[in-house]
Length: 538
Image 1: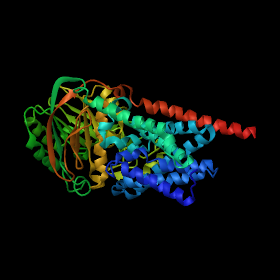
Image 2 (image 1 turned 120 degrees about the vertical axis):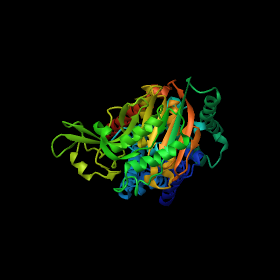
Image 3 (image 1 turned 180 degrees about the vertical axis):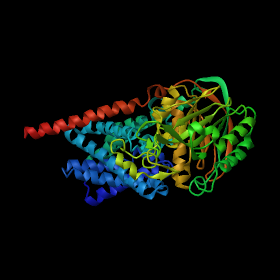
Image 4 (image 1 turned 45 degrees about the vertical axis):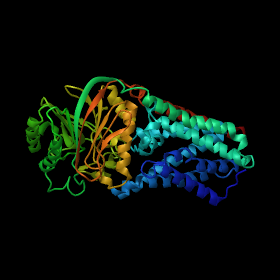
């Protein structure tokens, strides 16, 4: 029997948090540790239940674990906004602890075996919520840990990141149960041989199947069409240059094209620039009267066969209030701010798609649609303030040769979002981002690595232009074909295949998240009913 003191419980909680940090991308990247990272915390939870101690202690020790985990993996958020970063870290730690407490509650009232099964459903329910509400923060979804081990998870084309979450939690629970039996059996491993074999199979079969998927054939669904792209990383300081009052859009675009023209060719199909490459806001309907548009048109005469896809800060004008993001104008009417991807096609057409997945605090004031006064507490970021306008649903650009999915910054961590774009016909994922807010930290490296997961889920090539951070090219297996260095101007070019076949995940979206969330709700309701029944029977 494993006996734990209060001090040992604190140390085990601390150990779980440290293991979670060490296995996460670029805060350790020791990925294999993810399969034991929950075991110390599970030992603490089990001890509290067996000894019939106060259930509130589960929350306390879980909060220690998850606070350490959040600080160790996402501390860099504080570089953009210290107060906002601290609030995000504490809030996310609290939500994770509540979810773990819900597992303890379910296990206590519906049985131990059923309780451990419920952990998987409840945790995926939590992750699914984090993908779909106003304070969305899916950065630490467990399945993201494999973004630096893409050779292990080629089967994400069927499951998305939640498949990784299931794999991690199953192995942690099995290893925990083995460890507990080891102590209960007088510290003897021999009786656990069968359990070790099961653990080995569950660990290795997904990896073996991943290698089989990866090397069993050529590119998925290639139709023979190649597409030539040029990607620019202009490296403009977002704090002191990009949005400075004395900085002009034309100067920044000049720097952009000086880099681009190092890779100029008459057969380039797409020139990709970063988020807010046009940093000064303008009214979309008035774009042709803007000075920078004349500059772009002039460049378009040289790059006459090339589509330009760049980020911009834009406004929309409306006679009546369009959404919660609409703000009144002094002389009547309303306007909305947008974080926008702007496409100028080779045949001189102009199209806009607005960012749909917004950063809480910086681009959306959480729950302000229910509590409008919260807009007054808006944080400013990049010249915009308050809640931005969004697309009604994920959208894509259509050009003469193909369809393109613009993915602006934060949107690239949402698998179902890009799957929706691919389902509409996108054959190429284009990420436009500005990762300079966080400095030279794990943040921009993690952000880049998550794009590798989107490539696997959808079996699409990903090209990525960062203002600074990491720009790059990723193939449909999540392999990094080319990448740039932090804080260095750069330009990349490549000819890539356009792929058409849609994966199960592209077709169905986050079906695991939806279904498991529903089951999680039923589990909680059932646990409450059992508690009420037991209380009444007494």
